[in-house]
Image (tube, rainbow, N blue to C red; front, side, top):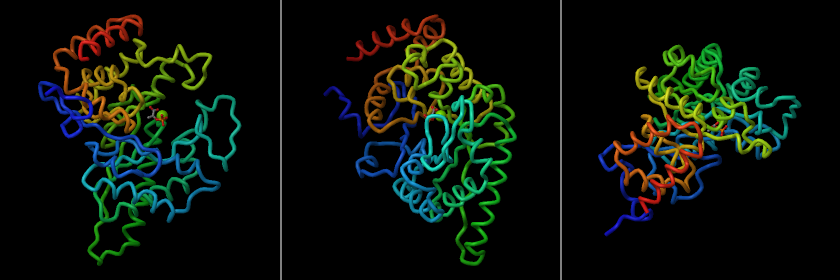
Length: 329
Ligand code: PEP
Ligand code: MG
């Protein structure tokens, strides 16, 4: 019987020749529905912690955050949950923190804002750590990093939070606080040129292809006037993504992709061909991407990637992907 998208749900995400790909979930609020746990995902690759912050009228307290984060960690006890620290600014305003900037996407965003307000960062990572008591699946991800010094400062605050929470737990109650892995998003092009230096400071990388595309091409990701120029299949973006994958392999550093490209059929195929083995996407893309991966061979993907990297125009790549998709039915 022919495997359909629906019947592939119980199957592993692997290519025809057995290359296993970890499919993870992007989430913005708590993981509401039970069915999400059953669609065969390998964890949460991106929890956008700013979304619950944006839906309130004030900063959530530490205790409110503990409850929010615990709900997500508890849904996936045996699987990694990557929680990104607050990534506001740019297109994600906080209603209670009014900013007026000429270039918000080049301005006070992500880690820049939280390191200028270390109390916000500290409370957030304290809450993540407290939420993780009894679990070992928390990973912490830093957004919009540009420089090594930002990673050093964030790691210092994380250590401080870890010692505070460990101490509050008490040494004699036998409860050990799990030390979460720390990761950095690769979404500012400057990071691509500092992979070696940053790799020695963190446990993993996650490529934010949405912002990386915006910054490599200097095209606002939300401006309809330039929407036709915003294209993750642009040769410069593909070359950049390929370069990141190859260099992370050399550095032996785990790297995933959590931008929208990972949830697009053509994007997922090219990313796997480049060497990415973890893709994180919205829930509705999971079944489709799993099915596609189960119907291609690595050798075919290599041919597609070679063609894509030689193409001068995104349209050629789209055409090639369309032909491949049609051949799969
Ligand atoms: C990205 O930039 O690709 C990403 C995953 O983060 P966000 O879309 O939340 O900026
Ligand atoms: Mg981003």
